[in-house]
Length: 144
Image (cartoon, helix red, strand yellow):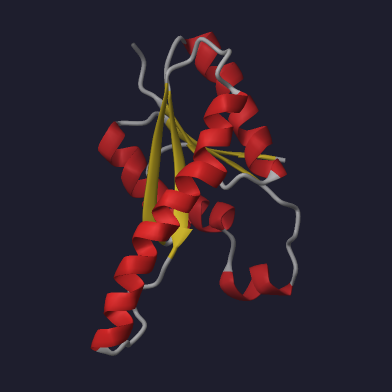
């Protein structure tokens, strides 16, 4: 079987379009999809011991919520397809996590949606798509 396709998915309309595109490609290539949802989190904040303990308990809650509110509906939405889909949920910076998971799973490409909101925040902080095209070591498809 050819290498899987990794899809960055957050439940938004752009990520629905990215998943739909990846499904079409995966079917044509007879391959699987790795559906990755990233919970944004920065390890660079300075917290007290109490705040760290609270963050750890919140992480478990966040993971469970992401599973039920984002990943499960996505899997149900595409359950009729013949494509094998493996869900992955991780904490971190989206582009870095997508790149690392793609490498770990031997993905052939990364597919993400573009939200079209290229406003001031995206210019200052960058977007996941813009960062991916700078750091990814495999092809990236940005679905409009």
